[in-house]
Length: 391
Ligand SMILES: [Zn+2]
Image (cartoon, rainbow, N blue to C red; front, side, top):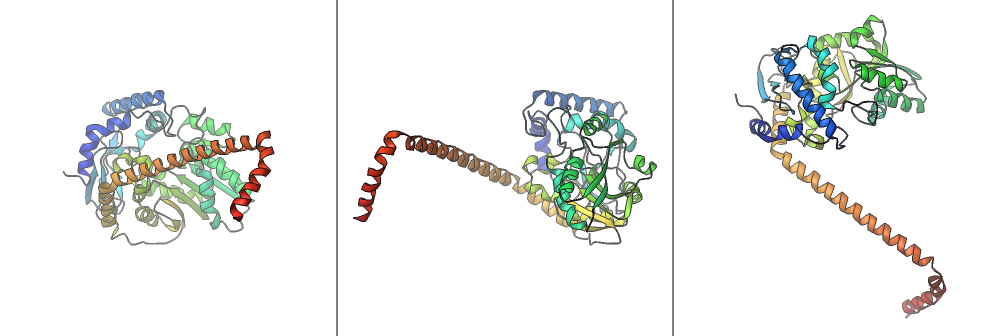
């Protein structure tokens, strides 16, 4: 079958999937040969666990909206692994199929997710798994919606090393809000790193929180929701742990913001990974939340959103056409975006070089002005200068 981004698929299979695999960069853009080696080994082991059926894959036969009418967008992910993505022709929700099934996901996240996507070594130089400043950003996004709140009980699902919670807590404290936080995580090493920073961690996910009968004012799902297998089931659990007036902050990598994402080379195929079961825009994410009894309070195409319990039904009838048009536009213009970005970077480095030259010049002038010979001859020069301009 022809894919929506057919030409890119051929391009990726040929050269660029390998180039991506062998990039001598980690998620921070730091050159790190060991990291590439770790990734290669992890990818090979991941493949072999699939072949041995220790990690099982599951076909996604039906869209969340009930439709079975899909169009194939891509055939493999950014690592060159055969995890195709599909768009629902009824609602525009993009999903990966097959995906790693629920039973196998524990093993996958314990052993493979981090070495494939990030660095193996969490505690030493790397504090934030996703991005530095993420927790503070989330606080700024949610803060206008918190009226006269002095105390906040928050939960982050999939907290990584706890950097988001730590930043959120510090930012809230400065605005006079006392935060009582908890983070869940499926990776023990991450929990240990978080606890070193004083962030309380719980091994597991929603189920463990429900078991402990806890409810929260705010639940943070930062780059987590796209990893879930059964969305309605997870949202039902979310309902249980959220206070009636509670808020949910959900952030996923928005497919309709790829024209701004140089980290993916403005390329859909560099964006998709086998770990993401869904690829949302604002409309398709809102629809999923609507179907489970949530309404959108605030949101954009990045996708950064806040939901609360409530009734809402948004119009999804044009979403498929809109997304398809966008993806074709992106595919046709991604080289242009890359060139623009390179041009901007060149200009920035030229400006930087000129700034350094100016600094050198200023230092030389100050040195000259501090010499005795300059100070003595200075009055003469100014008289001469005045004579010149009074002429
Ligand atoms: Zn659908």
